[in-house]
Image (tube, rainbow, N blue to C red; front, side, top):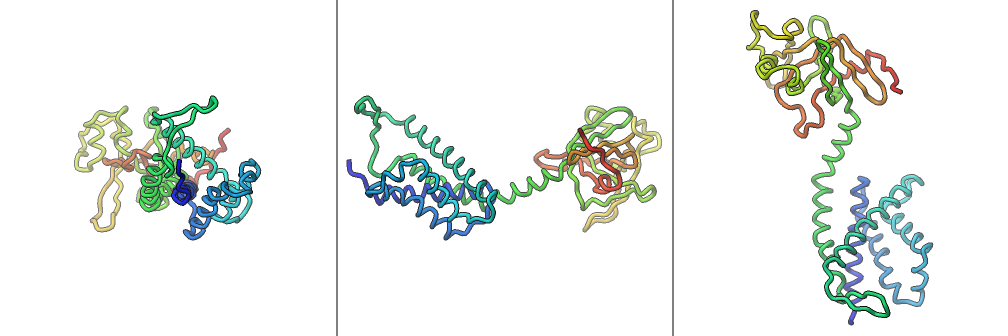
Amino acid sequence: MTIYLDVIWFLNLCIDLLLLYITALALKRNVTHWRMILAGMVASSIVLLLFTPIAWLFYQPWMKFLFSMGIVFIAFGFRRFAFFLQNLCMFYFVTFMTGGGLFALHYFWQTEVEILEGVVISKTSGYGSTFSWLFVLIGFPLVWYFSKSQLQQVEVKQVHYDQLAEVVITINEETVEVKGLIDSGNQLHDPITRAPVMILESTALQHLLSEEQIKALTSVDSISTDLEHPFAERMRIIPYRVVGHDQQFLIALKPDYVKIKHHEQEHQIKKVLVGINASNLANDGEYQCIVHPKLLITNTGKKLA
């Protein structure tokens, strides 16, 4: 069989570049494209070196390890040992996962095989595996798409994750457990008592109130003196302003207390109001309330065991 070495080398160059870019994407590294291309060329040069008198050297495990260290060093540099080790481990992880997947697909669809001295040999072309080419053709657009469009969303979610807390609201000995987002921009207070106001989705009260009772908490117009509501004595009306709108009003409830668990600390607050919001606060349901930052500052947290 004729082997087109230049085509095989180019295929390996593309695959090595993809592996390096996927590694950078997984670790959210800022990359220098010329360094990535240089690292890919060095990595793919092993295809040519296997046809030289020193080919035996690159079959040694220690040489393979040093070679991969050189590739990672060229691509990402060396800031500190932990940084380099993380890059190297992720590069190996991506390589093994990708290589294993391509190997499995190749032999899953392979129909023509030969047995040579007890070893199963599959037939392929001298241009490289079909699935390897498909990986290159599909992989590059995907890497470009995720690096350009999705990476910012991943970073935002990580910021949100660090700002999420477990919130338990107790009203009339009934509890509401939700995820809360600690929002430094929330500075809403009760103008009379100066109690901080946190915002809660109305859907979080479904196990406590009927639909009519929940609806009554989301519209100031629905409140009247003869309203028989289980939380009537706990209702407060909070005025607030939104940019571009006139002054509006929010119905808030006075809970028995609120517990907030954040960064292995538990805060129990009594001086707080819970504003009821009719719409969902997060489209993906990641959190159901917005926590006032003052609740974590003015109340000393208790270390959780």
